[in-house]
Length: 612
Image (tube, helix red, strand yellow):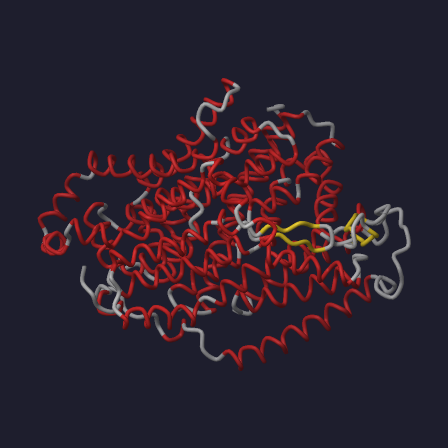
């Protein structure tokens, strides 16, 4: 493998990121943002005072409109305000995800304490709990970024790029193979692809916007199977759901989601021209991964036995999609493959590609995949979880937090980096360059992930109170006002009350909202289960109809990964682009996510109407 610095290995067709996309001018930008935020808050306060003069000055008197205090519309808008502040800051003010995470947290704490009947100690405790709870993702992002920067410095990304371009021909096919197939495979193992893919895609010649779009959009269809299907298995375990039925109900939405995301990737990669060129490959990619996941889920559901472990469905589906795409190209694009093979570019790439160099370049990913697979076995994972003992366990109030250091993927990412150095053989200069760029870029995505988790738990713990516990620690319990004033309950109950029997058409919106605010589908599935369950009971739905709605909730939470600010911030940070690119990506992805959410909502409403 060639030992040289990253810039010398970049293709000539890949110019440096324009200065306009770099993240300079933070001080001036921060001052401007402060002024805008203060103005917006001042206008908002005046508006709220005009709408409800006694809302903040007094406790909330009971009203027939909501049965729980202030009019439902006002509470609904205020419960959504942290999310709206973050979204507006990124999309309209073009601020970074990390900056807006901080302001979103300030708004969430202020509203929880000042309006939603939450003690300050509870709001701050929820903030700390969420911050630490994020470590499973946020620290994994930090170590993944270091891995990818080291690989770039030693020339590994250039070797991998050449290999991919030799095996898979055409921008559209490369984008679909990496984004949909490989992205789903790695994500199912718990590897953070938004931190891994953008530098590779840049090395392959994709634009910064396309690189981020492919990395963040690609795996969304199978997000429910991420980290060995934790978004499915955890709620099923906590709430006693039928695991096989829940998995099946999620998978019935995958064909539409996967095909939609495939076309979204093509649109972000090359606009309408790319969509026209890639119509058939997009359908093949989407249908193959969805059909595989749905087929495996149907086998389990129909037999009533977990013949194919739910934990590996995402892994198998990702590999199947890659195999089908490559087979399709060899069967139906022979001329394109032959032209590339006979061209000068193909000859040069073949000359540079050596099996030994490729294995060495891939060594970090190969080692990580092997380690992640080993650690994923339930018996091994349980054993590793017990090794540190109580040293890694602590509590906030009566809420237990286990860091589970040896069971987390970030530990094994670090181990994979260290072991791969045997094969990569980085020089001291390459170590220094990797560490320098890592220190420069890792804080923003780490902070964004952690603070968005804090926002999620501030909202989840709103309208809760502290009471004397069995031990010295105080116990966190719902207050008498919880059902009317918890921010998450307010959002769900308001939608159910407003739409009534048509609620099934909008129920997936809660999955989108929960995953964006909380930063993960798993959190959304757990935090909003009771809300969806209560709405189903109030509307007289059967268990099958409820599982359909809850499956749609989970599937939409996966789609929401496309517009999760922390993931966009993470992907943008790995290539050194700045706030302007974050805003652009958020606007583009928002269109894709909302369109898919509408389609999922229509499907859900029809399925529920048909008692499916």
